[in-house]
Image 1 (cartoon, rainbow, N blue to C red):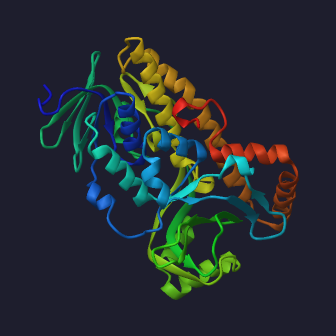
Image 2: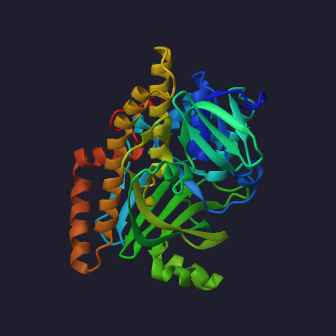
Image 3: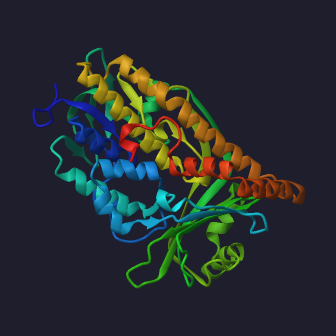
Length: 408
């Protein structure tokens, strides 16, 4: 039986990262209660300091944050993405994506710490959310009438629906035996913060090199007025150890060499971090009283900055499906509702991931001939308004069947 201090909730969300916490908040705004279980300590995740980890929040995702009441707290910390410059090794033939004045921006860049702070702040006094931090799940149970998990300290939590939101290595997904389509790109993303002499003017740079993309993502100036960007540099797995081991001066030189002075003189800020890049997608998103969201369901290359946004679309769709069903008197774990969620999200996520994977492979083909073909294609897109519009709508997250929470 559940502890009386932990009454049964509608949702039991395993994983309290950006997607899991957004789900809990979005559900609470619609009157749906949840337990959120996470291994981490919120104090550690929101500690002072900038480690270069940042996320692009698309227009649709910003609509979600506005609709669940966290946009106001986030607004001062977000750097608007005014345009995106895509180039093949800084050679002629680049594409510039710039929205029409009435459309606003292509999104906003946030340090991940600021996103966590705003979400935790919004959730801490929400009576429909019970937060269980520094908690290890030792047992999961899904039955005909509900779900339960047992924590390492013996606490038992009960709910109607279990949601796996623990990220790529989701133990909930693995225990449920979900089949995965996956492959390793044999690349590693190196992440670091930069300060630079020239203002970025809200431009996000995606510079493609044969060994992987080199992305410069605009951030707000720091409290000393220094211009800042986050760097996500993709290198071949075989070279990654060497790059990470470079001395500060050599590392600085390698970055500067790839930037062609677009932001002027640079300074590397904070520690370097890295993670391996792979593609993974589950054959299904739901099972008996179980739904997957975010990277637990689909992990993709960061080339287009859509990973978190894809997870937030999962959030919007799942909450909408649950609200519609509960309005009709259905249980949140009802198989019909979960089937609707899966049908809604499976195709959209696979299409976004497929396009990202194709882009990764296309720009990874070495040689002058391949580069010439790519630049010819990019020049054609630059001159074709319909194609540019399509790519911009994708970047803004405004394509396809959008959940209500992600609409303006």
